[in-house]
Image 1: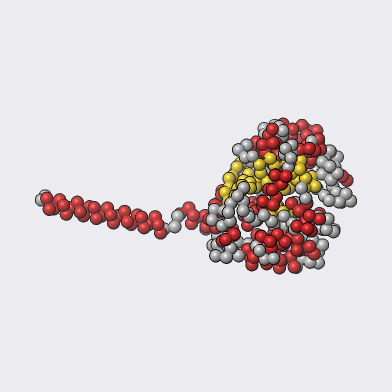
Image 2: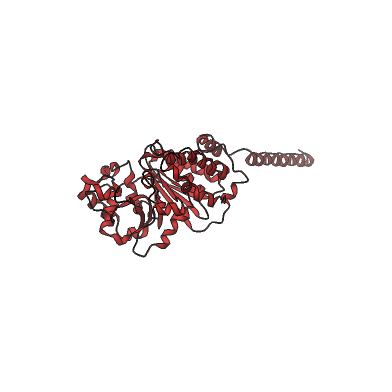
Length: 376
């Protein structure tokens, strides 16, 4: 082969290499990622069809400050309900650096991973998340699992399960944020050095209180505590040796624990009242606060911060106002205009419930939405 032929051959090979590299580069740039496309297909029920609008995307461009860590335990058929709660936390993230901690059964972890991964795309990585498995101690394992609702007592063991975290805001799956998550988190700074958890009273009125009328075990204060929205300083709980105190309470009062893990929490704080900080009822607002008459003054003054749909009020017609707010958040699609598709939708649905005692208080449910979305 002549030298000219060799040169032409080398140039041809070089040209083919350049063309091949260009084709591969174009494919990487323009073809959609297979995994992302798969996730979008799987998540059509969770807002996959809506991309951020220019109006609402600013909601997720705020400056990030202190991290707020929200944790929930999910078992059985609570996945959809838990995702609505998480969606509300994302919407009301405010200026916080939000971290979502999911403690769930293994068979539902993939659904949470796929959904939260896609929601991060929709909201410009406005939050982070982590997923953990449910773990109970070997001693009394079956009893812990079946205490009250399935897996509900897992919250008692979070100081160990989440041993890499200092503090969390634990919430039941049947809750909704109606105000900035920082509004609740700020109470950590108001706790004194001995307090390791914060909760609201179980009731505001002695006449309808459950613990003061029916409990057969010790409980905190005059009305007991509701643990559905609970600030937990995990570091202090570990120093208090929280875990070792649980089994003795279970063994002593197992026949009287109507509300399961919440009752155990009440027994412990009855014995150590200096260890708990009590914040206002607006941070865990339940139908008890409005079904007969309005008895939560802090909600009347500053609006509901966290709505708790206990006793299935989000899914049944027992309290139409609670179900209306849950439906509005469930239907809201992340990235769409929050004023039009969340605030106005909530107000419209609440307007249909004004014949009920809770429905007549509609302004307290949308008060903080209006402030956050700057419509007042």
